[in-house]
Image (cartoon, rainbow, N blue to C red; front, side, top):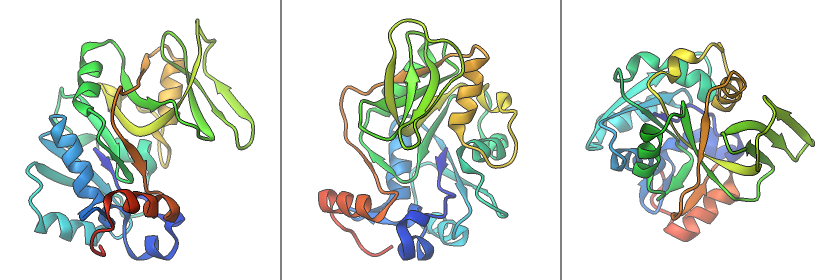
Length: 240
């Protein structure tokens, strides 16, 4: 699943006129890059949630061959964020198959097939691609898995269970793989993030595991400064 319903408010006027999914970096839209990334990891069907400029994305999907099946999950009233988007799209997933999730504003060449393999080989309900990266918001992991979150902007820290053993603070990359059972365990409703779901499930005893890729580049284009940095590295591309 590719999360592409956000309004792109941090991109200012550019975000108002163009959905993040259709912004180009290095001659390819972010949607094309995200679909290629999950397809390379083995995905045969890709679900894309849409809200902001949904019609533009729908037209783009109709006019392009991605090499895999691309299905849209419209959120017409409001964007439901990652957790709400997953719940809303639950009927579009193939039964019994793992779910690889990827934010559309993330650009990476992480070996995502390794992430899926780690998820399917272990006992975790979900496996999160994380990094040792300096960021204000970090997830807290111990020897078992996820147990908390901290936000340096306001000094808040939330622990859903006592930690066991060594603790690591890691940055979430916006890419994660979940068990086929994951959507059925989402009890939240309305607009909510998937990390809140993971924290609740971790507090209930479910294992949410970290995966730190050994190689690969990670970029995020959520604001104008980061978009320009990505374009400086990979090329500007045509106007979307």
